[in-house]
Length: 78
Image 1: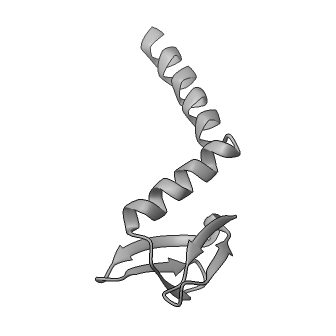
Image 2: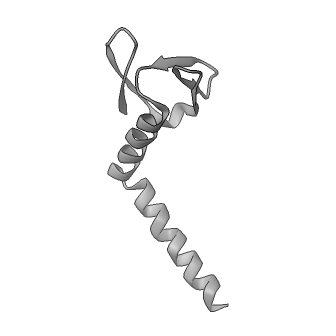
């Protein structure tokens, strides 16, 4: 779960796997996979950094990056 902030300064936890898109309209608006929209204080860039940090923490990104490297190496040999 990632921690974000509503405009009333209340923090909340969000499952980042429910995020479909993050836009600046001009307030940061997060659209979830169920169509619900959330407006948060964090900028879209901050939301991206928070999500990346979370994915790194659970090793999802580093695991994918390592796997991608293996695919690249095997294709380079062909």
